[in-house]
Length: 417
Image 1: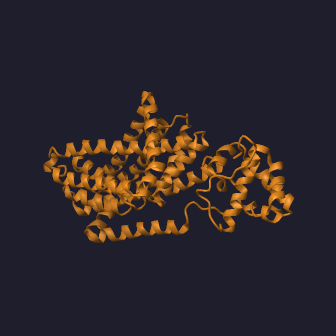
Image 2: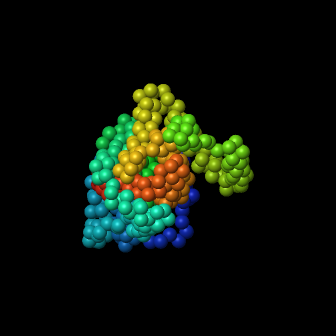
Image 3: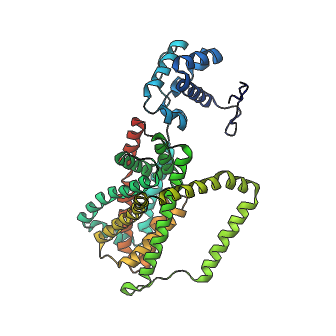
């Protein structure tokens, strides 16, 4: 920063590292080159860096003069100026006498993480039938109705239409529909390899920043979509459990007793109190949680002033959830009779709540076990519930990884993230 008297101050050491590794320093040099070039032009940026650092250290930045290596703010400002980084790279090569080098390979998802997730999926696929009635489940897979399974494919693609409208409604900036849909596919892929949907939220936030939304508003917008999904889940819990509680088809589900509810509420309040009385907890709440909640509240108040945006946001959230439920209904139909919608919906939304609390990516393992347990509790035979749940998850959850990965690569190529 430069103060009013012209003195230069170095600030923002919160995320600084002592004795940083060479790649981090090289990436910092690349960031400095890009940010200065945006203000003063590539020629002055390279000349100043060469005078301050020397040719040898300046040359280490060459592999990191690429969009993925610079900060989100620089990426946003570089949007539509892709030639600037190439110009910087050429000038650095000329000044340092360094021949062109290959760009550093920056991976957002490591092969080890991907292998671990796929391994968990394989383990789940192999072990669950053994825990149930393996022979009957395998026989049911052989006798599945292929027409129903094929019908699940377009339904799976419709899932992301709902989440697209959800983000369009939550965002204050007008976003292109197809680019936003592509972003939802890419976010779905990232959610498969990161816990608690953090990867998908990061993709959405970066997409919004590249689209012209400032960082704080982008974070609040993503938070608003998460809040919307939570509200939709509460509404569906009330709907399906009330419906199921009427005793359709001789099955009666009820909400937990008042004692159980009080115990759960007490545990949550005690955990929150312990969190708030610790210095680290108070600091985290003040610096991270409170600004996030204020941003969500401000964004929600802004959306509430526009009935169209409100309809798009909540309509998209409800549409996404109901489309996913329809996919489960089709999967059930492929292996036998479909149970009453009320109890089936209660089992579905119960598994969704479990997924949101599970630390595994997408609730892998927990969702499948909760769904099978819920379906058997409403009278669905294990031999039908097990293959139906596994095929439902395979098509709606795992098959989207390929188009999601392709969408992410397309977005990176177009400079949308």
